[in-house]
Length: 224
Image (cartoon, rainbow, N blue to C red; front, side, top):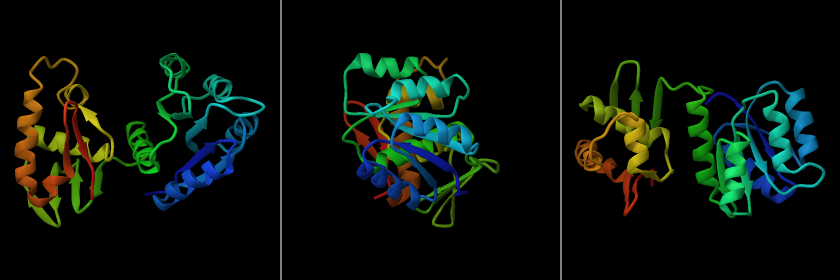
C-alpha cells in the first residue's frame, strides 16, 4: 500500500500510540495531534492528509468543533472516536459529516479495517485489485485466484467476494450486503445472499471459512 497519511487526534498519548502502531503496520504514515486546535493547524499545513481519526472529548477544541471547522473547507473522511454511546451523540456526528462513529473501547484491528474500507470507497487507494489471505481479486480482468489457482465465479459471486474483501473484519448485515452488491433497487429476499454465500464458500474450499456467519445479522469476512 502506498504511504497514505492519516491524522490521529486524541488528548491521550497512549491512545494515539495504540492507533498509530496498528496503522503503521498496515503501511500508513501517521501524524498526531493532542487537541482540536493543533489538529486544525496540522490539517491545513499538511495538504496530503487522506483521513482523520478524531476523539470527541478534548481540551481547547473538542471533536465536534474540530469536525465542524474542517467540514467548512474539506470533505476528507473523518472517523469519530468517543466513550459516549448515546444515540443523539452519534446522530450529531453524522449531521456534522462524520463518516464512521466508533465507541470506546474498540478493537484496533476493526478500526484499521474501517479505515481501509473508507479509503477504498473514497478512491484514496487503488481498488483495481485486492489481495487478502491468499485470495486475489482483479477487478479489471474480473478474475479471482486462490493461492495462485484460478477460481470460476458467477458475476454476483465475484461482486460478493469483492465486497467481503473490501470490508474485511466488519460485520455486514444482510440488508447492507443487498444494498451494496445487489443495489438499492433490489427487492428480493435476503435468502438470496445466503444461497450465494453457500455457493461461494464451496468454490473457495478451505478459505470459504473466512466468511463467517453472524447469527441473526449477516456475515463477516475475516482472515484467521
